[in-house]
Image 1 (cartoon, rainbow, N blue to C red):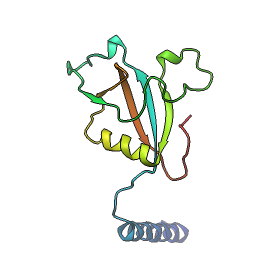
Image 2: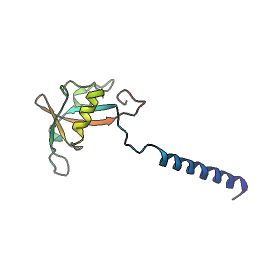
Image 3: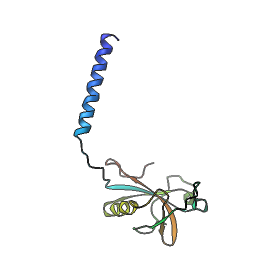
Image 4: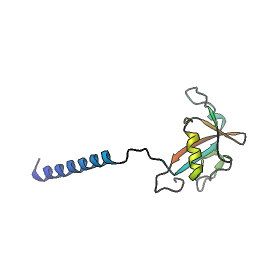
Amino acid sequence: VDAAQRAARAKLSGFVGDLSTAAMNGATAPYVASEVAVNVRPERPEDVQDDTGVTPGTAAWPLGDLGTLGTPPAGDRTPEARFRCAVLSGTDASAALAAAKDATAITRWTSGGARYLVVFRPLMPDEHACPT
């Protein structure tokens, strides 16, 4: 190892040390999103039971009608087969996240007499729209 490589390694080691110190001194509270993307689609017959044989539980959707929530991806020719996406904020985001707290990834959400698959994605502070 020559002198330039030793200097680069020392600089990198210092940088890693600085990052570690910053991480230890940073916030220790969990991130709480103020907005959440909700992806939803109606349950299909093939969704009723997964490969493990586990039958999904159900939970009542706490906000409005899932049948009309969100929009399909741009240019989607088969909107009935795809997830629609909506961004919830404020009290709507809080209510959805509170309901999701006791759900699992395979929970089926009920709304308007139908069952839906719902996927939640908390948005980062610089995100304000459904991911594309």
